[in-house]
Image (cartoon, rainbow, N blue to C red; front, top):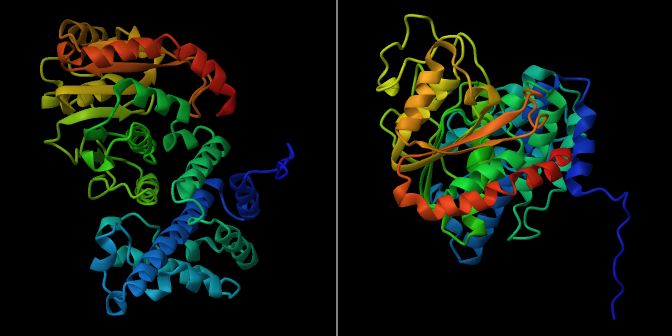
Amino acid sequence: MPKKRTISKNTKGFEESLWDSANRLRGSIESSEYKHVVLSLIFLKFVSDKFEERRAELVADGKNKYTNMVEFYTMKNVFYLPEMSRWSFIQQYAKQGDIAIKIDSALTAVEKSNASLKGALPDNYFSRLGLDGSKLAALIDAINNIDTAKDKEEDVVGRVYEYFLGKFAASEGKLGGEFYTPKCAVNLIAEMIEPFKGKIYDPCCGSGGMFVQSLKFVQSHHGNTKDISVYGQEFTATTYKLAKMNLAVRGLSANLGDIPADTFFKDQHPDLKANYIMANPPFNLKEWRAADELTSDPRWSGYETPPTGNANYAWILHMVSKLSDHGVAGFVLANGSMSTNTTGEGAIRQKMVENDLVDCMIALPGQLFYTTQIPVCLWFLTKNKKADKQRLSSSNAITSIVFFVFSQNQNKE
């Protein structure tokens, strides 16, 4: 009988070991810049592994003449990589002084060869930062140890991405909260609204965590990920790139708009009617519009115009306007949104109740979010409660254990 392998309590997971290796770059660049360096390299390693796997398939099938044709990769949801963009090339020249330039060139070539990656990758980023060559080479060696072929059923790169995004958000504090929503909150929203089939929308998508959890929900319930369509928008250019990379490493195609843009002033999905909306808007955003701007916007039709001093209700009404006739929304807001009467907000909330939009609300404990230590809440809205009885009953069951789940997860984030 084979001996059981014992693992020391001090044994590190490979994500943590990789983080320790990547952390050697700290001190030479800001943490806000550092995450783009690490995540861009992980992305490049992942797409290169997938490319090499697909190329080997073509060779094995006797289709050598097709190994440099883009369409034979995209048909399998694989990005085509010119030779200068392949991980083997980057690794070969990792110890040379111009490796930063080579990485920039590799990322540019990947984007040019794959239309779906337009605007997703850093542009001349590594050269600008003036990184220490030996530390960058050590990071490349560490990332080279990620074995994406080890377990076909396990989302290895997705795990690494999720781990690193959480670590970066924790290290950056409030700024980190601009691109990352704690996983426990995202999980709960997904379980409540059950985004199984249809169009999913996030008007302030950050690094795409809501979409990733939607994908996991479908997979865990043995659904078909091709049955969901993803739409989103993000204002910050660097976070927009993070979202595109985060979704690409999981093979999830999404329409995040042509460019990063303000959702209120440049809505990139004006005609969208979503089946599901999942969001974590910026809390209590002040001066989001001037007094004479967007006063008669159709998104507020039938309601008071949201006040200029706080965007919470502008986000709510924007999401209400995007719901389909049977749409469901779950989103995070500051607790004050449940009771405020400032400048018409109470009237908007009353009208929403009268219109029978409010499904339920869940108050969460404080200190869950990197953006704030104040308690927050989850709002759940639905356009058609009568046709939604089954989901509502399951939501009630979930609601009864919410506080237990969060008390268990709070110290793990």
